[in-house]
Image (cartoon, rainbow, N blue to C red):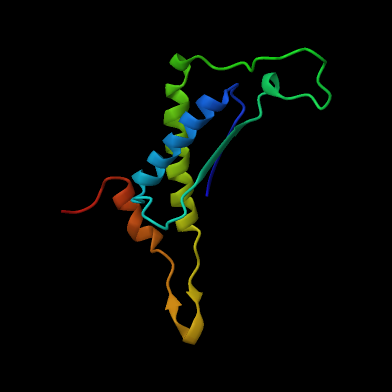
Length: 123
């Protein structure tokens, strides 16, 4: 589950566009959203301009404010990079585990992987 939260004033349409870009961050880590993977994204905005009042005024329809399309590209890049970093951070925080019938899975060797993430891998 990927959760994208922003304080940018975005409409439902632009939040959907932002959520789609989060999947690119998943792809950058090697994820392919395979069948049955359960990869979902939810995106929401906390922009005060778009809050719905608990008791709206009668006969007043308020149109939500929305960031212009030209302003979306920096947000797209930010959500891609933030998603990638969050996935890598979660993998690096994993601890060794022991399961049923004493089956053991070791944690990722962080120090050995860092050169690959920096682009310093040996040929």
